[in-house]
Length: 167
Image 1: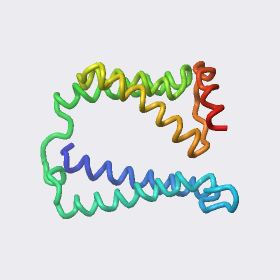
Image 2: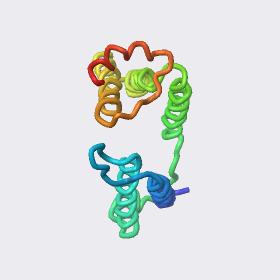
Image 3: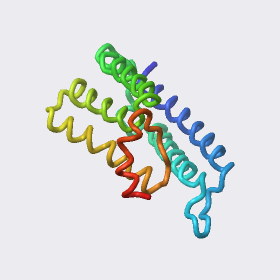
Image 4: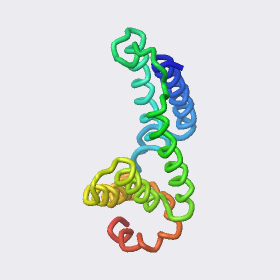
């Protein structure tokens, strides 16, 4: 598979996934509910709609051959790419598996720490700074702004003080 073919295949796959997500989201209210805020399907619907627009733009750019990727006829995954891809996929799988045990926030922290420090070879200060701040920002975005509870696993008691700030 060439880079050009892979870009087209991925764009079409993501476009189909966007349509699916929009259809599933539309099963819930996607509009504004007076006195409550956005309906349960609003965020996923509009995010999927944005993804569909991005797919259309990517497809147009691929068609016109504007980007270097859309003109590239070399192999999509070479040995150097596989060397990065395999640990990345495995670490994401471990993160998803850990989510059920230690919660999404601790799993994100560990994933980012591994990825930044050992895969990206960044310094400890940057790796720890981003690894600690990303789950905190994610927590307040989902829990406080969107009122969406994410799984916390055995780390749930660590969040009790933060609940008092939000609720």
